[in-house]
Length: 211
Ligand SMILES: CNc1ncnc2c1ncn2[C@@H]1O[C@H](COP(=O)(O)OP(=O)(O)OP(=O)(O)O)[C@@H](O)[C@H]1O
Image (tube, rainbow, N blue to C red; front, side, top):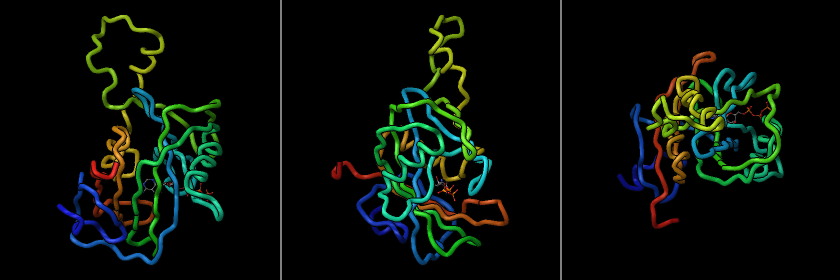
């Protein structure tokens, strides 16, 4: 797989990680910028359950539209503060395009950020209810009889990332984000009413030469 296989709208030198679905990509006119931010610590990831608006009832990172005069990282920081009450040293890890058949004629361009630390106290907001989930390596090799600290015990009891209650394409790029691999991608959905179904996707990571 080379550069020639990149979906329309993506540019650069990337190595394919995952792809699938139908044979043709949807057309779109323009792109609108959105952000999505995750706090990822040793063995856990912070998600929010969306209580209203676009993506309602799904778990996701914290984010929203990039407003006029804002950079993506500024918007990501503002949305994290508005939706979860915290600040964090966000680092950019990925970008993907999201196009919907039966939806808008523009593509969402979603800029993905992560941080390991945060400041402030997490709050539930009108838009998001925060919840920590265990990243896949958590709990492995801890026998039931082992005595662990209260903090470690709390981690062991976290639920795994709820991919079945997230955007269907999250399962292809969240692992890249967890392992700190810089990525791009594209994900085309079909929407019927409120229901979105994944039709075609492509995700790739930045080759070692570009680091
Ligand atoms: C496959 N598709 C997708 N996969 C993963 N995440 C997706 C997504 N499509 C949208 N998202 C995120 O969903 C939020 C919507 O934001 P949204 O609430 O509409 O924005 P914002 O808070 O500015 O709006 P309002 O002020 O409420 O109008 C925002 O984080 C955006 O990145």
